[in-house]
Length: 329
Image (cartoon, rainbow, N blue to C red; front, side, top):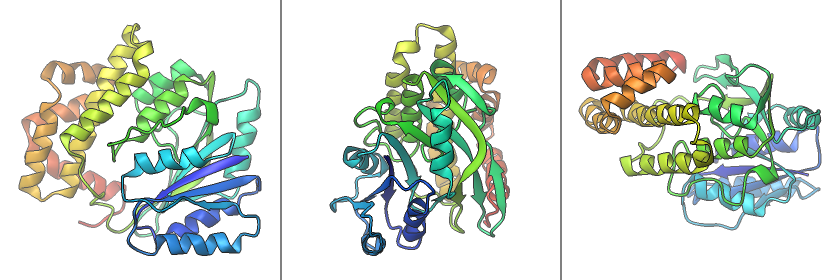
C-alpha cells in the first residue's frame, strides 16, 4: 500500500482537486491521509464529502486539531499512515494520474531505491505552464551523493515530488516549530538512509502558483530559521567528518538564510523588507559568504549584494520573482 499525506490549511478552494488526484491514480492500493491544520473555512467539509463518495474508504481525515504548522501536520499524518511507501502532496497541487504507478515501478528496478524523485509542472497565475526538472539529471545517486546534491540545491528539497520507502523517513522527521523550508531536513535524512535515490525526468506533479503567491504567506522569524539550520546539521552530522560535506552544509546554511531574506523582500513593504532582510544577511559572516561563493556561487554573490546594496538587490529580486512566476506587483 501507498499512503499519501496531505496537510491542509484554509484549502477549501483546492483540496477536492488535490484529494481526487490521488484517488484517480492508476494504482488503487492507496490511502489518502488528510490532516486539516486548524482551518476555519470549509476544508474539513470538502474532504469529508470526497471521502463519502469513495466506496473503498481510502480517505482518512485526521481528528480535528488546532493550527500548528505544516511540520506538525505532516508528522501527524505520517503517524496514521499504513503504507509501505509514503508520498506527500500540498493541498493546492495535484498528482498526474500515473504518478504512483511510475514512481513505484522506478523504485522497484534493481538496485531498489529508497527514494524516487520526479520533475514537476508549474502553472502560473495566468495559466502558463512550465516544466521544472528535479535538478540532478535522470539516473541513480547513492545516498551520500544525494545528500551532497540536495545540499547544493541541485536535487529538489521538496517532499511532494518524491516517493519514500517508509523506513527511510523515521517516526517524526519534520522539524516542529519550522513553518518554511521544513522539507529540506526530511529530504536529507531520507536520502542519507537510502542506498539508492532514483531521479526521473517525467513531470508527474502539478504545482499551482496563485495570483497572490507573491506574498508567500508568513515571513519566518530569525529564530525559526535557526531551528531549521539546526535540524539540517543534526541530520547530516554523521557525514561531517568529510570536508566536502562540511563545505556543502555551510553553503546550504548560508542559502537558507538568504531564502529567508527573500521571503521578507517578497512579502513586506520596502522599509520593513530591508530591515528584516538585513537581519538575515547578518546571520552569514563575510567569510561564510565568501566560502559559499565557491560551493553555491549564486547564493554567495547574492548575499554579498544583499549586504552591500540591499535596496538595489530588493528591486532586482522582486523583478525576478514577478517574471519567474508570472505574477503582478
